[in-house]
Image 1 (cartoon, rainbow, N blue to C red):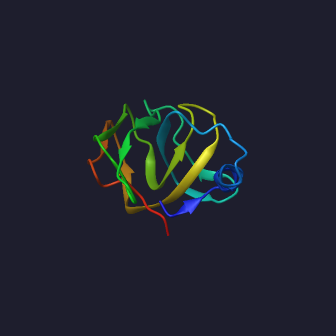
Image 2: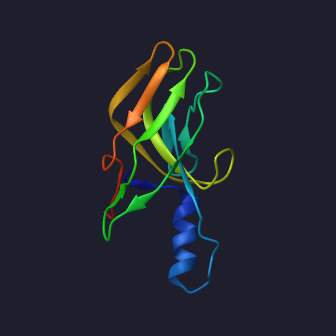
Length: 124
């Protein structure tokens, strides 16, 4: 996910200037249909069993997800093309967003899995 949201850019700017912002204690991955630096991810599914998933990362430069991330759907949710990180399971602040390597169409109940090490947050 190469793009930081405006919120994350401001958060990092304050941190670099020693202003001690409240950095997120946890981050949650979301799926959607698009995004922008202003809003972060857009088009998150509503209902259908969808929920953001907590993510743990490791790495010294690029950050990689440690565990598989599983989104469970109880019904169709359409075609999802983007992913984003938030600082809360619901609501909260958008941190970063970007396109999926391949769009995922959820046409019925099922699971979308992001394998360990395949979600990469890298400095550009």
